Image 1 (cartoon, rainbow, N blue to C red):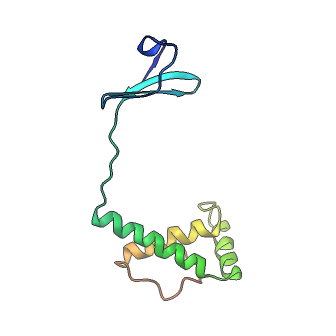
Image 2 (spheres, one colour):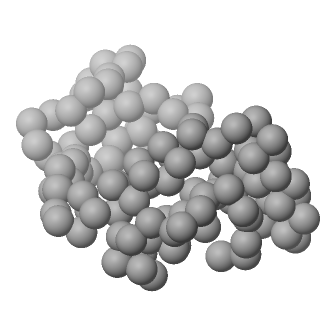
Image 3 (cartoon, one colour):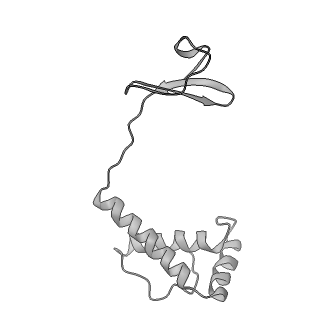
Length: 114
């Protein structure tokens, strides 16, 4: 990434030039970098992990307020690894689903260490 003065013989430039370089503004500077194509792959493994996240978030949304509060208490008691209950249940839930080939736990309501 390079900082430039007077890019493209002008005072200012932004956007991409073909599929080669990109001009943009950042940190108060004009910057140019190599064009990078976005990775839009959607493999079976990516779909599986995304479904684990969706399952865990659905479980969180189904919990009552006291159950969510229990997860938040659990989160705050574990060396500040987590900031709130939803972060704790997502980490625990996705880890559980990965370790158990997508089979859901018998209960989402009782926090336990991942």
